[in-house]
Image: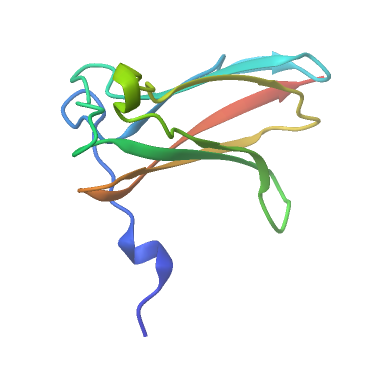
Length: 125
């Protein structure tokens, strides 16, 4: 049986335009608001045309010792050229975490499929 996870691709975002790029501080204080930025195509721009675009980005946080991750958000990019309007796959979101953990991101390109990335964040007392 194939698993859903086997469909995800990953790579170095500096050389692959489909990998979600995660920007957040490596260390934060407990209870502090964390500003998280996620985008696709930072080093090599993604076309974002009707024919070739990023449809969505999903962000989750998995706290150390937690059984399941928590979805921070699911962001859909729906303007792909209608009346000259194009969305860019770039998100800024703020959240708080009570403990250290991992940010997981996933993006979907309508031609090249599912892509993933992750980054650790340390929450200090």
